[in-house]
Length: 580
Image 1 (cartoon, rainbow, N blue to C red):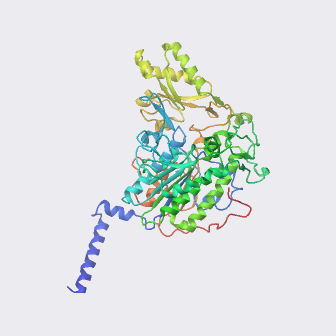
Image 2 (spheres, rainbow, N blue to C red):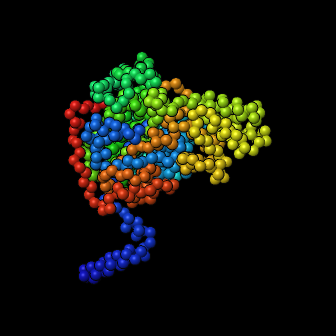
Image 3 (cartoon, helix red, strand yellow):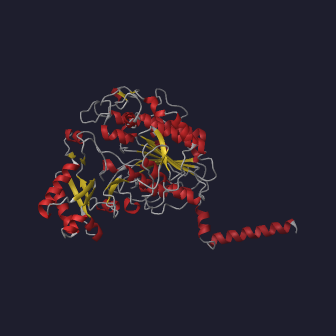
């Protein structure tokens, strides 16, 4: 057989294949090939900052270095009108929404915890008795309560398991929900042992590189070390005075700089680790483990793209005690800026930022300390959850009989005693309506919605009706959804603050994309953290997560996939700055 004959036959086959693709005769396979980006990211890095108020980026812009947050905002696609569209702005919900592109009404992750009627108690969102903790003794945790796939799961499915997916955090629910069911590993900091642990969902042994870091006991090196401000106090003009009386002290320490971190103990242990997790050193430790993952798992060095999820949780632990206007929170953000700068520099040297896709967002914001709002003339206050339940239960007893009518209250979800309702032969919708009427009359309460209203589609008009719908999942949500008024919060402590409402201070968060396939700029269109997973999927040319309801942020996606050309990246920490 002559070479000319072989060449002509090959040319004919190529021509036929081109015709089939052009005419659509090859069906979905041809469409998939046509949509596949020519130059996909090799490593997707999703960075979450726990309890990161939206305005931190603008408030501290003048103090940031050049390689962290400022680098992202100046060179990335910055979505300045990004907001969660659900009610319970909490850690579990926020991470699950980013990972799946879906809200609680689809995933079932309605809060950090919910009432389990079979067990008669509140259960954590990641609690799972069918698995064990790996790396230490303790209750098992997994991502199995979350329905649907994550973007990491879809990367595994699209690559026939070849893509690697790893997540790291201080919190189990952050690492687990960000990773999903098919991740290679999800690791979090164990507050009892001071080491990183995982779940048997992903294997029964920690990787050698995690063990090696644990063997160094890196958290212990900060025991008794003073946490000083990064800059002179005169530069913290965006924050309240130090030692603000409504702040809650770090355990074993106080409310003023410098903070000596011991947890009130004489040596490293559980008390110390609880205090350590409120410091910038804890965030740096998470970044160190993320770097080890890249190094030892060769993330970004495979033919198929890999995924790395990083959740910095220290801001949540600290923010509950000191509030978003404190010098402590400002210093934590400034030091996180340096941590990110160092990590980006590492990625640039290891892989090249032109081969990465970086996403930065947050799981929720934070309400200012109520007393600080009151000092400024705002209507604000605290609603003690125990007093709220007592008032509501007493009112129901006076109308319905001597029963314990409330089984649990985990704001915003209130769970009624369904057995007592059946026993007294009341109609559940009637009891719900009565309880809602009483709850609405309690000072500080804004809106109350009932399960019957949700099931029948008879919700009253209100600014947060759609958010309530997106938050309600039958069997996990309460019979009542109770929302405080703006400036009010369900808080049992007399100091500190919290989050968990649909208001802007809790729901509006940063959202920035940077890297391969991204057109930088400042975008004012409505966006949501639920848009993260669909946009990543579009950039990778893979299926969106199974329950995703967010949109592709097409305005920031480059129309022509080619070599990404990042602007010059700082190769060193700017003068006058130091690592935390």
